[in-house]
Image (cartoon, rainbow, N blue to C red):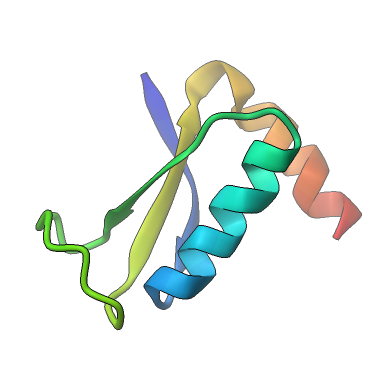
Length: 64
């Protein structure tokens, strides 16, 4: 199961969050917030991580 941990205003920011989380060893996915599967650049995106790793994201975000 995946948990939403962050919302980004565009694809570039979503990829930056994804890279940060994966750099910490946490797998992540990004999907458009509107539910479509077209990966357009200037739409909101949601960043997801495994549910059992979501608490680690809180700690990472506190460090930033």
